Length: 376
Image (tube, rainbow, N blue to C red):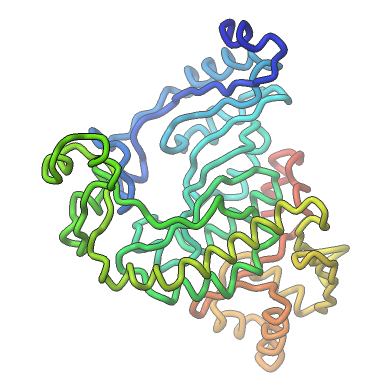
């Protein structure tokens, strides 16, 4: 810090301090994500003891006013820290903490993150289609990813995520879903962009390339840097590309990636446009009116008592057949159709999920944790 202040005496640069509280990946120990090339030597998970972690954070809080962010370089937040570390931190108001997390956080977890100053996360969302997430072995569904994005909006925690495409085995169904569904998500934090998945050394895609039908060769830049032939480059390169350009998954990606990317660019533009109303979708003044400014103009939907009750029920993904058991069969299908027409629901196969925030954006960020969890 002394050297930084010597170079930038007017503090025109605010540095980020990095720290490490764990190594390996507790999820990767159970199921190695197919595209992940991290932890080539050992996936075994080990974390700093909670008391030592608290002491580490406290030692860095002394740089309040000089540093704006503490960035944990962990592959994934230790699960125990949600109870044993983060709630015990007194993070300065001018500092925020970044952690990588798994996307299956509960509202209790999100409340702890927000209250402790973890205002930036990388949740590893990667996709918004369950079939694609299964191909990755992410151990998560699209509904959990959407729930996380809703919680981030409610608690003003910014998620950093990419929309990845081009997974071996990925079909057109996922791409069609993106093109149709993305405009409904303009009130949620958008991804950084749409990118083809990369094949890295130490990942299952690299180690089991034949199983996935991949013909992997080092990326082209290696041959421009090193005076070795392809076979030698394959022994030490880290980044690879599939040269089987007739693979079905590749042809599908080539057909659809432009369309998906265009929708994501619209999403980013809508979210970042300061000349328009903020993009919002939430209940207003009770459970029968929905405020919607996703298009740039305000629309308010009067959805009635049953419509409100259905949306409240769909805070959790629910089978259509279950809704028919809970609500009068004659009316529920027409109510669902109306909610779909308004763009208030997400559907994958026979499950429905509400996209409407239960409160206004950021409204739960400063609530006590007990109050937050009571509303789950």
